Amino acid sequence: MTNITVGTAATAPPMTAEEKRVIFASSLGTVFEWYDFYLYGSLSAVIAAQFFSGVNPTAAFIFALMAFAAGFAVRPFGALVFGRLGDMIGRKYTFLVTILIMGLSTFIVGILPNYAAIGIAAPIILIILRLLQGLALGGEYGGAATYVAEHAPHGRRGNYTAWIQTTATLGLFLSLLIILGCRLSMSADDFNSWGWRIPFLVSILLLGISVWIRLMLNESPAFKKMKEEGKHSKAPLTESFGNWKNLKIVLLALFGLVAGQAVVWYTGQFYALFFLTQTLKVDAQAANLMIAGSLLIGTPFFILFGSLSDRIGRKPIIMAGLALAVLTYFPLFKAITHFANPALETAIATNPVVVTANPEECSFQFNPVGTSKFTSSCDIAKAALVKRGIPYTNQEAPAGTLASISVGSTVISSYDGGGAPAGKTEVHLGHGPSAAPAHADPKAAGAEFEKSLGDALKTAGYPPKADPAQVNTVAVVALLTILVIYVTMVYAPIAAMLVEMFPTRIRYTSMSLPYHIGNGWFGGFLPTTSFAIVAATGDIYSGLWYPIIIASVTFVIGMLFVKETKDIDIYADD
Figure (cartoon, rainbow, N blue to C red):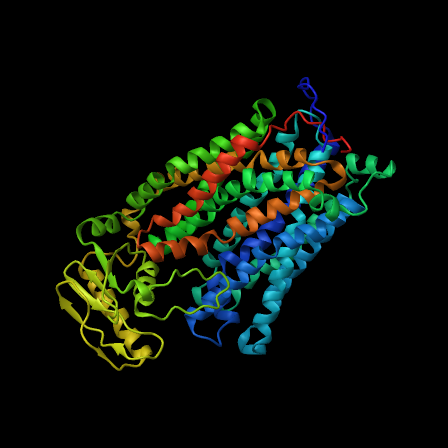
């Protein structure tokens, strides 16, 4: 690719009415797309009960997460399909199609009969709809970002595309707000029965507004000029990925920019919410409100850093965001524990928990598609603790010994969940392996184990949930806002930078694939990966190693090999 570098532009003229309409339409439509996509994640527990009720609750939740993950996994394929169309037939019509697919898929979820009504067809249709949503999202972002950037004057691309970057955060915020409104306006039983459908049904109104606005837009001037000159690509996939010169840039975009951006983004919004609700046991409604507050405060920083990138460059801001995340994640999350659940912090210090088990039977519980079963006594013990947000250390036991959990001076035997001879769940004083095995029904053994563990943790001072009276809401929101500001640093300039890295003829295809591999795979599977790391190590903060390592690798590659792009002429043909 030959890039034409130009000098820094003079002060850009004020935004025209057409440019404002382009930004508003593209941003609004993308807000609605993200709103649709995040509804499922926010309501996964309710959806599990509605569509996977034919299996046990644990498996139902896993399958619900599998369907959620399917939407992330398929995003790169959507980038290929719609990126190709966008480079061949145009930006406007391609991302008009993506929003139609996304909106209709979401609306159908709202009217889809549940498992009790149509049986196994319900979860099958649901997963198909999730795949369609993922495909559509894979084509939407690249189209919107490319479309806005190609309308922006030189020297303002960072500012213009930063509005697109606010959409994921605003979409999440909108979904949380509507769900919260529905929950507050009805009883919990009504919401779980039928009220959960309302946020999905509302999407049809949002879809209508988005389509109406987008139909009024014109094709991007860069694509229009290129097509009139007969220079548009006839085979964008081959040109993008079959040519090493361009493929090398695609790989640099992925590993030197997007992978790190993705994990910082998902840590700052999704993993933070997961940590509050699943690990610290903060009330879900309170946690959502705190996340929403931090998003509201932090979102203007997208525009700030996008505009700043037009002056000092995209790369310095993105790299600074990655570095800050790497250096401060551990102290920030420990501070969140201190202010959100101080009783848990005290219990960890005074009554540490130890899992004694044969390492040979302990699995790394990474299960992104929900098909694996972890039934050894070690896996059961560790999963039970992680589910409760309880940190622990590991101690090795001889082969053939059932795993046990020591809570202070109390020891609880685990059990074999596979139906083999299981240890009688017993509580005794002193550390060490549990007593001799006895045959037991796994279901009955599981119930006894859960009760014994719960009683021991309660006695040791481990709170079953965070006490609302002890939650320092202001401090937690401040800490969450810092995480969101890191998100704005890495995310605000990324759209402009990706657009500037590739020529017009294959821009949609080339930028979409690394973006969606990074955000769909590296970012989308962050919660699952972090859960597995926590289960393996026992440290509730160890899941942060995943985003820290990915961000560190991206920082090194980005600093060494990625070039600044803010002064590149995006109208260049090659």
